[in-house]
Amino acid sequence: MTSTYETGEPAVVTVLTTTDTAQKAEDLATGAVAARVAACAQIGGPVVSVYRWEGGIETAREWQILFKTAAARYDALEAWLTAAHDYDTPEIIATPVVRGSAAYLEWVARETAE
Image 1 (tube, helix red, strand yellow):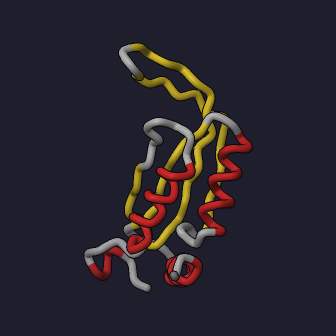
Image 2 (image 1 turned 30 degrees about the vertical axis):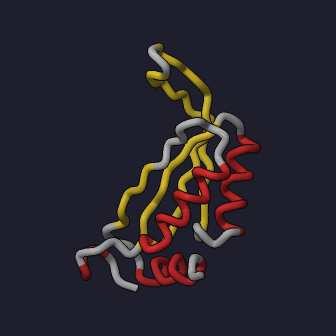
């Protein structure tokens, strides 16, 4: 497993989403790891989110979930999150991992292999 730095393509991405309860966050994290669309997920929160929705400004307490997955598994993770999430338009944002320890990147690849 190599990094973006070596190949020009990301081997691993982190994917961020949010939800409105700690239990939902844990369920999303556990489900994605069990489905092998993420190698691991970290839950942080609560955070305060301020956003525009349906013409107004909303403020809500949310929990963030940061998933680590192989770049090749991003589409599967996005599809899984879209189906499992209860938000109308869930935040699903991927960020490429441009550098990382070889051992960790290899672990992510192994844990998300189909």
